Length: 159
Image 1 (cartoon, one colour):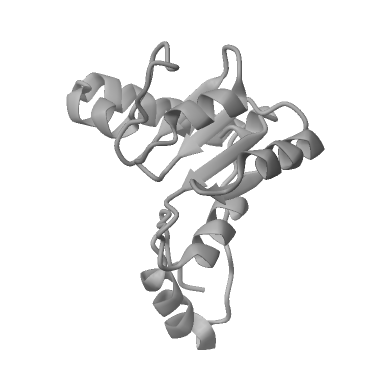
Image 2 (cartoon, one colour; image 1 turned 60 degrees about the vertical axis):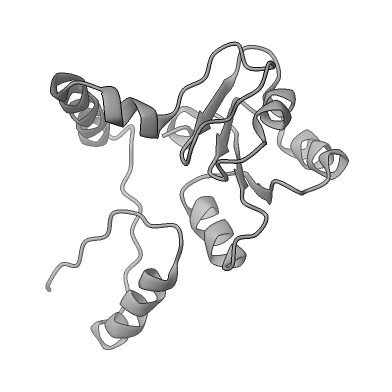
């Protein structure tokens, strides 16, 4: 959704991820400008960020110690989203954890979020990303998806 609004984003993933390359590929496919692990040298990341311009969103899927690091990267009043766990630290004025929100949100709030996303899709603001493979390669494609640590919503349609 961030890329729909032309917000540059970075993703920080766990350093010990067993299948790092497929996760990077998946996140870039979804719109991330930069994907690094939490042990990536800060100076090198800052150089990459200079190449893409201002970063408005940092997504932490490591659930680790990267809150302060992310706050430094996005600076100012930008956005940090955590998916697994919640980034912590004195540098965060406020934080949002999707996991925590989902566990506490009312049914009406969840329904509104789904409606808002559906409306964005219907208006063309949010586009569906899909990958088409020939039917003969379907078993291999499904096997590849099953091995990926990062999952997206997948549909199989008949022809």
